[in-house]
Image 1 (cartoon, rainbow, N blue to C red):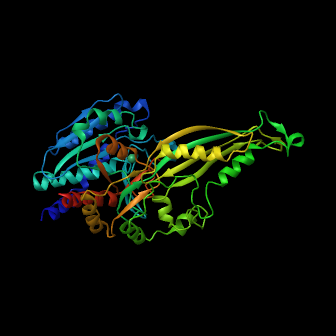
Image 2: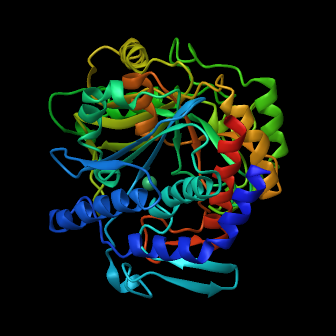
Length: 456
Ligand SMILES: [Zn+2]
C-alpha cells in the first residue's frame, strides 16, 4: 500500500531528515534584528534548494522586508497551500541557554530525545515535518498526492509587515481550496488537535473626570463626586453574579457549542484542577453554566487589565482625584462584531455616569475571532487519521489567543485554514533552550503523510 510504503520510507530516512533540520537550524534567521537580514535571506535560499532537491520548483520572492518562498506542484484533487515560517525569535538572554542556540544538537533527556536549538519547534521543525512528508511521498510514488503550493514567510516573529500586501498582490496565485498551517501544538502534549476556534480581541481605555482638579478629601470629601468610586462601580457591573457580561448586545454572534464538539472536548478529560492549580487557584471564575474548556476556548470574556487613579505611592495622601481610568479588554468569539461592541460598551458606560462625571474613551486593537469553517471534508478526514498516529482521537480545539495569518487567508484569499501542529507545552518556544521532541518530528512527518493520503 502506498501509505505504508511512504511511512516506512519516512522512518528509514529519519537520520537524514534530522540532518536537514539541523542545517536549517544553524542559520540564525532572526527577523526582527536588521543585523540578521542576510541570514534570513540565506534561510529562504536554503528552503528553495531543499525543495529543489526532491524536484519541487520554488523561488525566493522579494518583499520590502524578508523574502517569501513560494513553490507550486501541479496535481489532481484538492489544491492545498502549506504555510510555515522560517524566521525565529531573538535568543536573548544568551546566558540562560545551555548551548549556542544556533549550534543545534540532539540531546537525550529523561523524557526522550529532543532537538535543541532556536527554531527547533517554532517553526522550522514544524515546517519541515510537512516538507519531509512530501519528500518521502514523492520518492515512493514519483509524484505528490495532490496540487500543493508551498508558502514560507520570514517575518512571522516580527509582525508580518509584508504579508498582507504580498497576499493581495499574489491572491490569484496563492488561493487554494484549503490552507494547512503547522505552527500550533498537541493538546496537553498528547492529543492531536486541529485548532478551529481562535478568539479575537478588543481593547478599550476609559478615563473618567469628576472635579476639574485634585481635591483635599477633608475639605471636599462627601460633597464632591470621586471618579474612582464611579469607575469601580461601572467595572463591577461588567459581570453579573452568574459571570455573564452585561454590555447590551455583547452576546450577539456568540454561537452555541455544537453537540459533536462538546463531546470531543468532554473526551479530552481536561484537568481544570491542575490547570488552575498551576497558578494557585482552584475555582473556575467564568460563566457558571459553562465548562472551564469552554471558558477559555469558546466563550467571550471581559477583563479589567489595569486601573489607575488617585495616590498610589508610598505613605498616604487624602486626595480626592480629578480623574480615574481603566484598561478593559474583551476576548471575542464566533461572529461577535468588535466595532459594535466598542460602541455598545461606550454607550453602556455613558449611561451609568452620574451628573458631573464625564468619560473619554481611547480604543485599542479590534480583531474579530477566527472561527474556522470545518465544512471542507479535509477537516473530518484529517481528524479521523491523526488518532492512528498518536494513539488518541484527535479533536477540534480552541485557542485563547489568535493566529493572524489564518485570518488573512480568510479575508484576503477567502480560503479556510486547517491549523495542526505537533509542538508540546514544554517546547520553550520564544524562550531559552527551545526544543522539539524527536518524537514530535517523526510522528509529525508521518501525520502529514496520513493527512495527505486521507484528503486526496
Ligand atoms: Zn510560530
